[in-house]
Image (cartoon, rainbow, N blue to C red; front, side):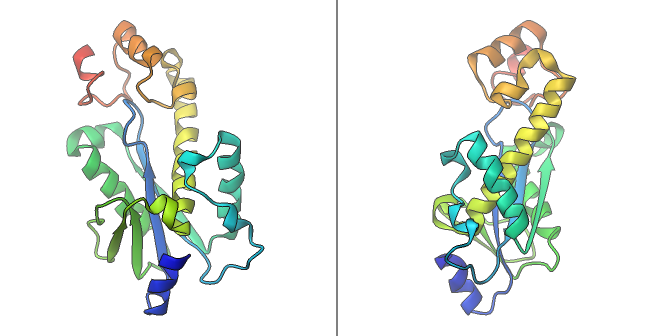
Length: 201
């Protein structure tokens, strides 16, 4: 909470942490989440268990997801679908999903701490934080929210398009996934501008 406390002390209340999940996959949306944590967190709070989603097992992420949902002062998530990703490019779509997630918070944050090196194109000030999901508790919380929501979306897409294995690889470019695209062609939720998909159109 050191980074958040710096901005809270300067009068930026509330402070939101923002992160995304799904920039790399060949299919499915990119999902962004924004989380506002309490300004003061007790030493025994379960929020201190929150970590970068990439360092957690599926079970740990799901457990911490519910802790974030229960303990956060506010949270939201938003996405850009594969068509939007193809139209904008993945970086622009990721930033747009973050913008939509931030603008869904109520009250709006005074500042956003964003994982990575890009500010959000938004009228609310944002501060990029390199490796923010490891250095900033609210960004780590957002990383968990975004990852769990996106995984749930991919599991639903697996039911609709069962031939691609979305429930298992979540749209990432595994050997099995790439072979399924070659054999069946891309589904409507594949990113048609991505290498590994565009060659099979």
